[in-house]
Image (cartoon, rainbow, N blue to C red; front, side, top):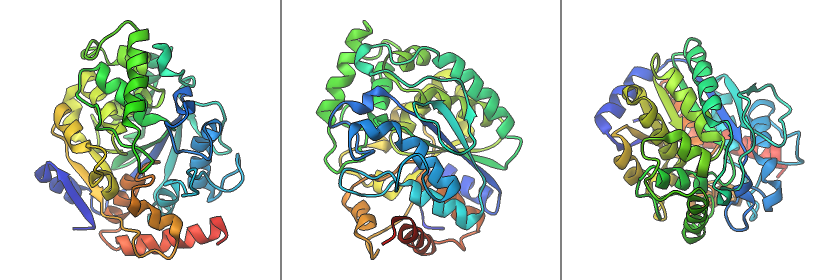
Length: 362
């Protein structure tokens, strides 16, 4: 139905999609950076590690302006595959969905309006001191979430933070969730060993062991997390009391979900994860397994397929490059639901190709 795959808790997932048909969403994208992304081999969000500070602001500029201002061109992987912000931008544009940018902690500010939660860029998690004011950021985000929930029928909350699957692994392990070998990657060859080694160094530096912060999400995030997670979780905690919230992303959403559950599990009845088919069919990660350890929330995946695309940069998604990010899966789903199915995956692909052609001038 509506080119949406129900990957977990189909009953609640179906009820939710029925409830949201034709309704008006607000899309928000939480952006942040972490020095962890600059560890060689960790992230594909940029041609080289140093450009990762520019990727999140460039992503949201693309969403709101249709082009990037802080960098020439658009964010690409080292192989030249374009950012998933292209999918998100196309979906939001087609369905006329409003978007809000939320800064959790940046080095480079985007040339678009954004809500600043007062967070700082994350340190390298190998220090064991990733963040200073995670609790303050989460509380501010909660207030923002409460207010945003009054402006729309439901919220779709995406993210852009290079290196985010490594920091997500850090949070999950610190909270006692068996996540080794289960987080995703923007690269086809998922560097699990490097991620695990990085997290283990961070836990050791913080004087903690796996599971030590099971009841203390703030400590987990502050030691081996990143600025995006407390901001994202705070928005969910603030909004899901009042309206449904789609947590839009891949395996990083498991870390955000763990933080939400440990902070206030009563809101989970109003929460679902929205992702892409590429994430749930990925053999190198296990979003479903991670979520099963945390809470039985619906996982919905948009059945996007770029196999028939005339552009190699889009076809590469079928080979396991990028997969998700900037809320691509959730935004595509919201476009399909708002249009009551008029926007199909084929309609969306045509729009994505049109924008790809214009932006990359191919």
